[in-house]
Image (cartoon, rainbow, N blue to C red; front, side, top):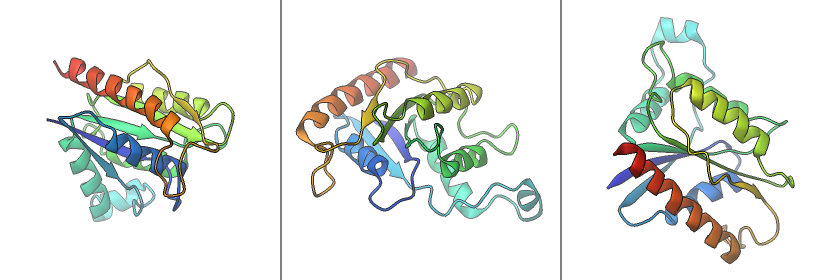
Length: 183
């Protein structure tokens, strides 16, 4: 069984991207387990605090969950044409201390939804640059720049029928890519 971890880059209650992460988890193919992580509670990265007090417990938990995963799925909103600070902060924490990155070698996929007509294309490109530096092979195709508009989610936060078909196809491709990469 493949164990994947999905990280939504938003803390907002009712976040499109948190809903998208949950929907992706529900649509994962048989034999795949997707755990949706929260990055809420991760303190701001401060090397001085880490040196004086050690790695904070929420960061230790995050790193352990990442290390236990076969692959990562990042579901990011786009803030000012880039990734949210909370997502960058979590990425930075889990990459430290130097030489002890939890990310290295983990295959990654990138999704995102935004009210913008171009979805999260710029944020995803910035995230892909970061993931490349962290030595995370990242699925290049198909890309998924999802516009959060009427029909993406229903009143209960479930992905709508047209979007469900697209997301199911994307997840099937992503999990196949993860399995190919692991072989």
